[in-house]
Image 1 (cartoon, helix red, strand yellow):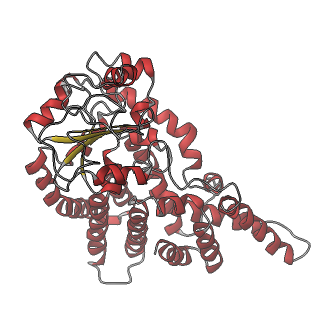
Image 2 (image 1 turned 180 degrees about the vertical axis):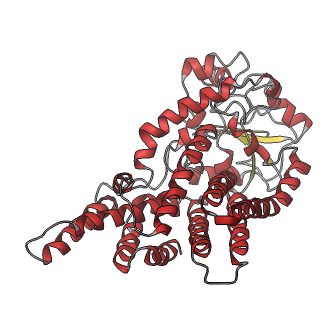
Length: 457
């Protein structure tokens, strides 16, 4: 769907040759295939973004050379706001596209620019307001836990500290924290992520093509819209960066610049053909040779994927689906597990799972005793292979690091921990504790004598 939408948009803006070549480059971009199989919503928001570009192109044409009903521009402005709203409901950060949309309408909206950007903003708010009110009613925050992503990764809440805190001290937040996070992450985005955000070096042609002037006002103005989007997305991506980017630097839901990749590729391909048309070739067929060589080099990354050595089918450590499914099968559907990879337990094992708390005693008991009983604890190399000093010892006396040290050195579970049953075969890479020996019995025993790691058959 994305390739088809980009093809017809490119055909409208440029010519069939650029459209076909852009479609081939999109199809052969390895980054898009990785996002397509990742389970993320990135490809969907890309499609919504291309729909937004279609809307802005038609709106710009109606402002410059009206061909439809005089009120069509207002309908297109409403549609632009609705598309941004739909994208925001798909991924909250997409809502920031309303800023470049307003800027675009305020600059290129013609005599009715003031009304157009207001209509777009109003329609955007109408789409997202019901969901925001629902979130406020349930969680007290307009975007749920995503509201606090700007705080996560700051000096006060490094790594995963905020997400694993039961009572985060949000009152100690100070403004300089956000500036520090913006500058640190923004520098990294500009140095390492922005040069390769399109998944292909065709983006270099786009950057070089910024110095080229198009005859078509639509192409010029659409390029300005892309330039409006770039600084907004860089700031939003820098401030919204969390541990998800550290875990998977490129394929993650916080990669916003990749949303611009399809239109960046289109402009890059168009600039390539502009340069090609300026070459004085002695033989006509050399043009096709150059086009073929260009296409081959662009497609080379995805071609190399199919060459040996073949990548592993699992991302271990820390994820090994068969073990996760086996561990989850010990619990009933209404029972709760605590894990350092709760998303994997929910995805592969289809069981309820809560994230590993910061504290192994007070925070753990606050959930198990006061909210819902925790029936099992499952730790992967995500925790078992953590840094000894900074992530184990310095975390405190009742930290999970000290808990693991006591369990591995003494080969027994600390006496104050309620989960006492432990099967063999998990240590030292993983750790599984349960309230009773679920892997042996179908019903809970009347009495459990556990606590000695490695003795259960």
